[in-house]
Image (cartoon, rainbow, N blue to C red; front, side):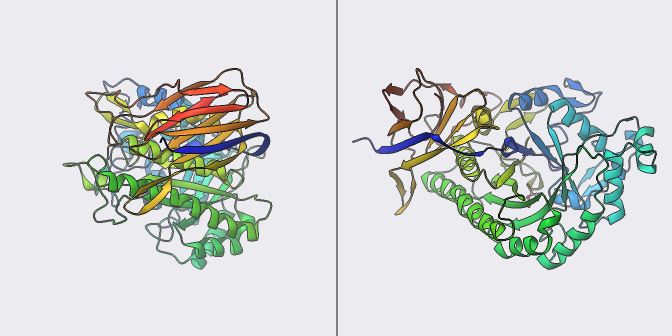
Length: 495
Ligand code: AHR
């Protein structure tokens, strides 16, 4: 018999609003993310607007990208922003010590990043340098970016061609300060946060900067406790970083494409750990911030595999398969289930690095399976979560089990209800019987993302192996909806 799941969708029980920033991105000066992936320079034969690739901007706009984090990552704590302003040919070079020790020519700097976010129509999330930068340097960057006064940094910006200040909605005070950002203890970082943050001034009363403190590495709950205890009133967000590795071994993480069912299972199981992390960090935040004013900002998440053969190990270039699509969908369901606390999430990283949504090869660009999940799920951005009761069969492998079915539902501003579903089982379809409460739809539209093989992926030669298809296997009968959820699939229905 076909495995069976029972679902009740309570359209009469609205929950928290899904912050659209949960669908955010992260682009670091790492490998071919910024250089080639986004920036090709104004003289490039690759079609561009002021040096920024047109194909990448168009593809990200289709996702309604809400927010972009930059310039790192580990790079942020060795980045000196004054090296990246003024005439490009005069900017000094540096060594990118974290990522391949390549020469960084600083051609993509503050003006280029702010041009990018303006082209994308998204919010800027800039990460400042606490690890190797001074308080003065950070203070001056904020002045340069956001002040319209007749003041030294605002005048320097004008001299570099930009009269009106930009708006920076989010500012991170350091990155991974427990590791590459300075190897600090939580107590030491909390004091540093308090000090640096004091000088992140608000120059635009109508657009105050949201300050994000560096948060925990995975399950480091003590970090969250110390930061919340010592600095919660001074922050708007606290971050969390968690990556999914198939083998949980940083030396041998596993291949992005050459894997069998053991790594399919362990990767999805590892992704589901995000729920425990968000639940436990949120519970600590609740102790200090019951009204949930401080957002949990999952500003680095995604899969991390061994790099593709014959590529620079410091460039973190990996392919992206149907497995990554399921990882993305499962994470979105988790973030949406915690929409009352999770205020932003930024996948690592936008182009050519880790779980990228886009891959480029010279002038060519392809969309990954992960891209298609962002596109299918954009209907959830800013929508209101609806309560679900789900009883799922297990997907069992090697004596371990995870739920086969994961689901999330929301109602958008126009009143449409969207139900997204994942079947983690690579072999068995699942029949989902869904009772609709407080909702009487007349028809259903749906799309499905799946493929015959677990490791199906898009290549430059075959860019459309994994793309969304119309889904017709959902039928309505009164208040009951029956969905035949194919094996290893992601489905989004509009009711
Ligand atoms: O995303 C790659 C790296 O992972 C980031 O630079 C760092 O913050 C994290 O360790």
